[in-house]
Length: 101
Image 1 (cartoon, rainbow, N blue to C red):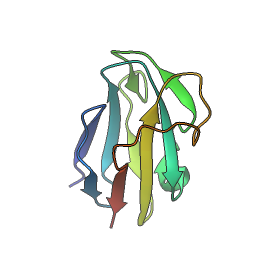
Image 2: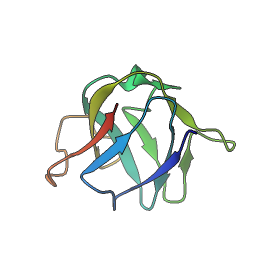
Image 3: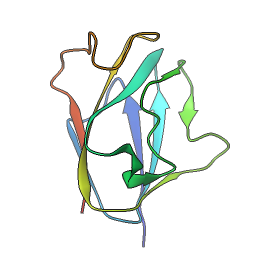
Image 4: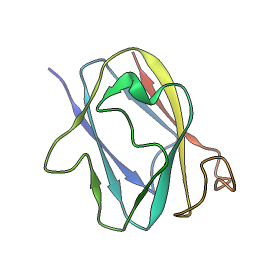
C-alpha cells in the first residue's frame, strides 16, 4: 500500500526514503522558492515544482492532489528566497534528498 509523505519545507529532514508509488505533498511554512538541485523532478507525477515560488501556508500539489513517485532515483532539493534563480544563493543547510526505491 502506498504511503503519503508530507515535507514541511523549511523544517525537513535531510533525507526522505520513499518507494515507487508513494505519494508526496509539499507544505510551506514561509515564503520560499523550491529548487531541485540534482536528480530528476520528473521522477514524480506531476513533476516537482523546481523554480516555483510559494507563500507561507501553500500546499503543493493543489486541490488535495498528491505527487506520485514514478521511478527509482535520488532527488536533491533545497529552498531559497523567492524571486531568485535556483542555484544562486541557495541556503547553505546541507541540502535535502528524496530517495525513491
